[in-house]
Length: 188
Image (cartoon, rainbow, N blue to C red; front, side, top):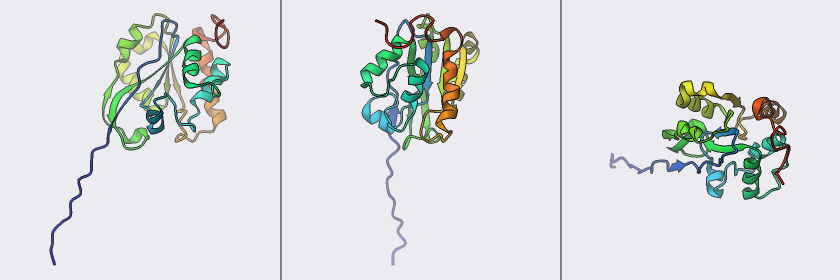
């Protein structure tokens, strides 16, 4: 009988990369996630997991039904209402979709992006990981903005939808309130 040990080469977790930012000169609110999950990456869409509540929550915030729209129309509607999207993490190794599995990350240049957004008033972090890493990256520069830490829209975060919505609706408050400049919905 042999005492040989069987070794199995386990490939390292694949590197996951975020999407390009969705912003323009109208961006007043920048919603920052951590890193797209597996379903989002497969679909090449922000918040592409059908169980993620992001599009439902943003529908309430901007007072425009987004869920039934195709992806390109959703992004257009967000931009028309002063909302931009990006992620705090540029790339990382991660098995699955959970933030707790993120390893060997490289962060995005948040300071570089926000410097290019002249109308930016609010930074909204979608979830605890995004908030923790984003605030660390921004440092003292965060003081220039209204900062909102949102409960994660992810289905992995089991807070009741109504409770998530209560916090997400606070994005309507302050200088970035919808209706003040564009009114709800798409501009004519």
